[in-house]
Length: 354
Image (cartoon, rainbow, N blue to C red; front, side, top):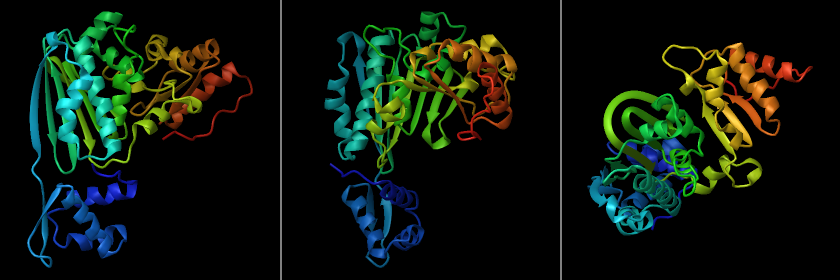
């Protein structure tokens, strides 16, 4: 099993794997990271030893090429009640066994959570899993032929449409079977992997760490549910660090969430009404701290801001409600709302705004 890679080592490895066709690769690595040529060659040798790349040619003119990605597909019948830990241990883990332990931990969490969701919630008959591993990263697709996750959530919770189901999923703690599930699986999986996407019905939902945690929506037409997971083979992230990010006071409980406010918008509509704010606020009373992410939102109305930061805040004084990635216009609305609730308040610093 490979050893865990430090953040700087991860950057070096990623640079090497993305510049394998460059001439004088060791020299380029040395110059880019201000390390010795010997240290650069050591990184190259480690990747060769891990069977991530292949060395070609004599020492003076040595070149490198990636090992071809391997793909394997498995099919499971839901009627057979496949157990996610057994499937992970017998089928999936052997294909990823060469990865560092922290990366394996991420894969175990992500795969078992998503596979179990398909077994317990899809109402389908079959699950297909596709695993693809290259020198740079690994990808897993989990596909079922069930009713579709967004459609099921819309039906179960009486939501107006599938878009609202995505907004609720993004907050976490949403499940159609609370007696057996905590609703944390999709929330944390989407933050542990580098790329996460769900394709179901007419909705596409993605969370990409490489794109500053953007949530995306696109029009599609697919039956069942397909979940796509991708993790860099040498990421320095750990499951513990990700869990801690959403825990207030290091309690390791899931009591902090981020709400992507943009998902409450429809088309070119602006966020101005109290009813829109109430959709954003649904179920956030389950958390101790709520960060409202205004990335992609240029302005909000007075009623929208007042409903969240005065009306709801006064009714729930123990919950911390904070805007992030908000421009000066939105911060002005935020200040006005909380100032009316707290006379004399001068407003927060601009920390966390854009």
